Image 1 (cartoon, rainbow, N blue to C red):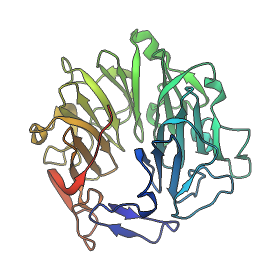
Image 2: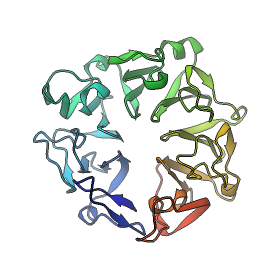
Image 3: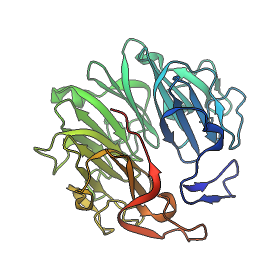
Length: 347
């Protein structure tokens, strides 16, 4: 569902309602990740597939192939998690090694196999050697930043730091992964990270959420140091997500909280309006379900309940509720179930 840009960003096809990817009907997929113009899928056999546009090497193929066709990334195996963002992709294998590829300045790669100095692209997945002594358990990709969390509870960041998304200063950029010292000083063990266009989130094992960068509080101001996200005190969080300029959290009780900006006036916070939300607020329209997972896009949000029903709000074309000829900006203001769509969420 949404727009299929294919290999030519000037030609689009709208898929409404949700449409099965024909070439993957016989493959058991356990996870998917989407960038601006490409997608990744992780199979039950721990293999990674990619498709879409490859203008910046985000598909991970040595020949730099482009086009919409689905294709396995041959150099990856035993993968446990994947991530995608505009111009780049990442994967973590069962040894805790982090692999990145795409626009090299954004993914901590400047030399080595698959790196093209003429284009500054990392065409094939390459291990982030600076983290070879750590076991990575989670990765998040922002527009130009990358975050990684280790089994020891440490957070590392690298890439470009627009609005302070890396946490090492408002303008600093890091080619190599660097431990986030401000989070070390907090004295907590972190278990998950999330990254948006210009802001970042980190989740502690106690369920506290810290945010930094831009758009973290719904007022457009940069937050150079990590701060507890307001409105979540006493509500232990188990999952965090970051979109373009908004964020959401799922609590242990299955409640969904959102905050940040509505981009652009897309009602993607789920509160029935387009106003910024400075303090995290529960999406009351979803109080009838126990939320198991969520996904935050540029102008839409998808939420899965424990029963497998998927709910959407924001721009209609991206949540499977629009018409093929519906114009961009057609909005679903309140969380609405997507017909004939069920998902299985993993523990």
